[in-house]
Amino acid sequence: MKSLELKEIILIAILAALSIVTKPLIVNLSAVMVGSFGIPNGVIGGMIYMMWLSLIFRLVSKPFVVLGFTVLQGILAILVMGMPPVGLVSYVASGIGAELVLVPLKNRNPLIVNMLAGAVANSVGALAVYFLFFSRNVDPLSLVLTLSFFSGGLSGILTTGIYTRIKGIWQTA
Image (cartoon, rainbow, N blue to C red; front, side, top):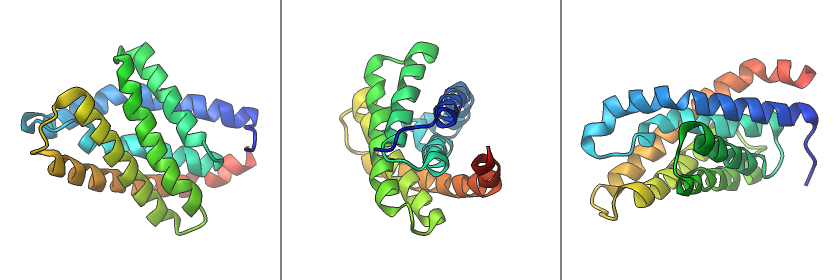
């Protein structure tokens, strides 16, 4: 495994912190859209949540960086937002899902890979949250997974747009 440079560690820390401090706003907006249907808020919020995962991979582009990023996010969510420690599972699950797509496909079409990584990560994370915090009733599970897949996929569009604009700045830093 390639070691991380100081600037990469700082970037990971800043983006992890930014992702956590913006989460309450995203949670509240998502709750307005899906809260009354008994669907986890992250299903829709995944469009933003998963953007961070593929963006950090595009900027740092080393194996296990997404997994480390999600562990840091989970720890910050526990410390800053008071999330129960068991919630770390959903962060790590999303990180594993994203890594499984991003690492082997990193040299393929970035838009498609980012969309697929976001879709898989959000679906895996939603599945973990669904069984950890909601219910074991599988009736709405197919709806949860479908919405998660599509909203997570949309995160790839955000990632690609943002990365295209900042990659020159980051590479010269």
